[in-house]
Amino acid sequence: QVQLVESGGGLVQAGGSLRLSCAASGRTFSLYSMGWFRQAPGQGRDFVAAINWSSGGTLHADSVKGRFTISRDNARNTVYLQMNSLKPEDTAVYYCAADSKGWGTSGIESRYDSWGQGTQVTVSS
Image 1 (cartoon, rainbow, N blue to C red):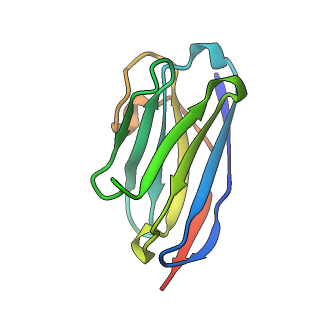
Image 2: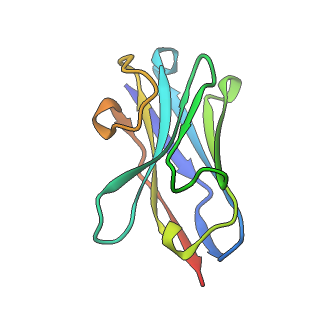
């Protein structure tokens, strides 16, 4: 099992930036991919971005392309989400997720088997 802890959320004005971090511990040698999802109030959980732990290949949801960037630091077992040009509609709880089963870098929620507790991001207009 992999344990995940997110940090970096907060309140920011529209147009501003935040960087989320997610530190992984435990069976980190089994990581294949890591991803970020978000859940706005009253909504389902949506894919944001994912990264292949070995190759560094990335996927980004269309809604965040050009504004958000996922990256990782293998030595620190940490994945980041740099969020620029934030909009009020980006307000959500952001969750980090890990795939240790080898499903491949994906935006499909069910392919991730470990989840963090979430960090709140609020963007004011």
